[in-house]
Amino acid sequence: MDDAIREQDYALEDPRRGLRAELSGWELFWTRLEATGEGLTALEALCRNEEDEARRLWQGVAVTDDETAAAVRRLFRDAGCDPTRYRPSSEALLRRILKGDPLPSIHPFVDLNNCLSVRLLVPCCVLAEGSFTPPLTLRAGREGEAMDSLRGPFSLAGKPLLEDAGGPFGTPITDGERVKVKADTTAAWLVAYLPEGSVGGAAASRILAGLLTQAPVARRTA
Image 1 (cartoon, rainbow, N blue to C red):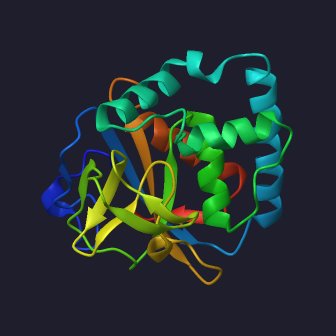
Image 2: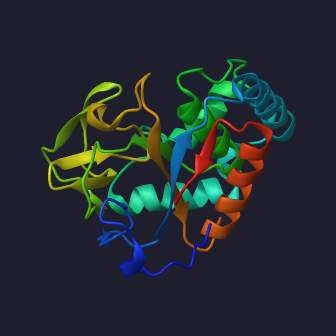
Image 3: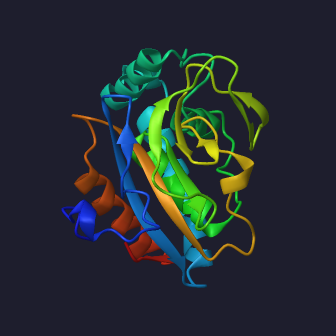
């Protein structure tokens, strides 16, 4: 992937085209995934390996002591969100693993996304292609705003969020029902919410490439 591609070279449906950031401190890493129909057994093994490695690295260690996790939490607070009450999705996944629970098996894109999120310790999401329309805005939620999320009705006040002309559709906590990956989804956009000065887009791209080498369930096309 050429992470230095110019904005004017993005396709009209590319979420990076015209992206407006009202919140500072975030770097959004985007990549498009197409299903290969392969690598499902390898993906299951990858998930188990990521769980084992996370338990080895984090057992007895406070997640909040990690510089990247702390940076994500600071950005939540800057937006007006208490990260202890509304945990970043990456923290929620890691805490699930450390309690002894496996990563959920949902869809190859989602499972791959969760492995990346645990590895980077930043929130990552996959959005079904065609479920949103650029240009997008990254901003803080306003009082009274809410969305129909994967968890049900979800208040957006103070939450970092992404929106298009149709309104808010995703946060680094949970995503909206309208952008969720379904059983028949064959193309999606993965977004990683990176704190500036921490994990960079190049590192995220490299780590994702490594995960796809181990479990080739998707190809990256943008």
